[in-house]
Amino acid sequence: MNVAIVGLGLMGGSLALSLKKLNFIDSIVGSDHNKEHQEQAIKLGLVEEIVAFEDIKEYDVIFLAIPVNGVIAALKELKDIKDSTTIIDLGSTKEQIIKSIPKEIRKNFVGAHPMTGTEFFGPDAAIEGLYENKVVVLCDLEDSGELQSNIAKKIFKKLQMKKYFMRSHEHDRHAAFISHMPHAISYSIANTVMKQENKHNILALAAGGFRSMSRLAKSSPYMWEDIFRQNKTNLLEAIELFEVELQMLKKNVQDEKWEEVNKTMSDGNALHKILD
Image 1 (cartoon, one colour):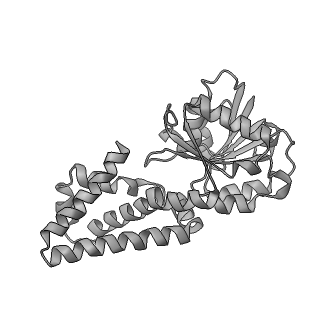
Image 2 (image 1 turned 90 degrees about the horizontal axis):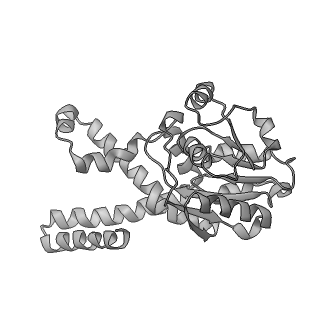
Image 3 (image 1 turned 135 degrees about the vertical axis):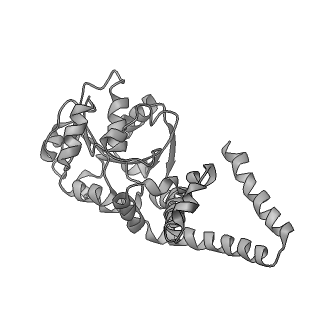
């Protein structure tokens, strides 16, 4: 099986490192519009060679590890692929992508979201094992071809990922709460501190709590602007519900209702009884 990966940043580069270990993968090539990324990917040994975008059509499996708008644009250029080709996107939102798929290649397409990553980006952020033991959500799989579904499931199984299946609109709403809203909050926390006159003194005190809360603010603004745009409605709902919780906590602090403050924190502790 010959694989082409479009987008050689954190997700695409890490995927290439993991795919190399699978004995049914014969070759891995890459495509990226960024010349610097192309050079880094070759230097780091992420892919065997760089190919032009139009040449990826000849490969058995095409991974689209690029921002959502890029995925939508790329799909329009892939309408003439072979019936046996499998296209797998790794976008962080799914509904807009799936709605945009040209009908000629709907059976070729598998919408996937690996729930993994770091705050870093670019080819040199690639990590071997990034996908291992992580969740991958496969969306609207019943609309994909049987061959393509089986290939995607085989690859993710061999990458030791835990597969979940759901409709694209469900995925996007869930992702808004557990991924997109936290990024919005992290950027806001970082900007709140940076706008203070004595920000350097404040940051001198930064320890684990602040670093954990602000870590996501290192993420690529270009990628996350794209995600926020594509999932605007769900993101706004998640932010509004978060604001309700924060306002409630703020009011209880103002009114010195310390038992209520304690209860709010105790209720929040319950989250990690589920996650841990």
